[in-house]
Image (tube, one colour):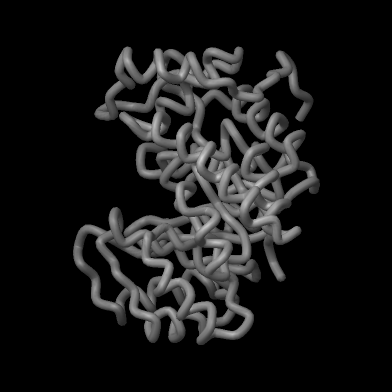
Length: 296
């Protein structure tokens, strides 16, 4: 068992000048630690990794590790289409003290599975850290078969998969066919279904602003209170439906902004959320009590 519980895929807060706001990042981490999360996933899709420089990605991960200070796990997403860049990010993450690294498969150029396998193997072998595959076919364009996942799982250090897909049948087959392989369900709206189908933990975007709801869901599932969990999941999905109406990265930022944590806007070309979405978010109660100052 490497990870259990709720793991926010952290947003990247920005200043008004679109620079990374490291102070707000620390406050978001501390807020979620107080809610009982098990870990954090840095510089993933929600963190808008591909809108960041290599140096920013390294500093974000280092900042999160420093703020966590051993109180939870930290997974650094080091994915890119350049294997050398991934290796540099992975080595930096190891030096920073993360607990694991993860990477989206190389995208855009329609790489073959053999090329993806070599890419993953080289990253996994570059550090002594556990490595987590990032399965996100909708955005990466890479659709892994169960046999391909099994082959990847044989690479030294690869311990699990972040499963950002509605295909829970595939997820269940992977879990059943690869003993000891960890699965982290990563679509918040199917959290309950994913857990019932065998996922070990969850990494999600909306946990940034409502981790307490999913920590409670996790407790209900572990106590086998499935009917109560169904009701709690329905409530969470009602909120998720508002958060994802437009750019959900900026929706999450807006929630933090209105609760005293400056987060700015996504970098261009991402658009702002609509006035209607802002109004809907204003009518939702979020449990956010933001300290003005957080010690590193």
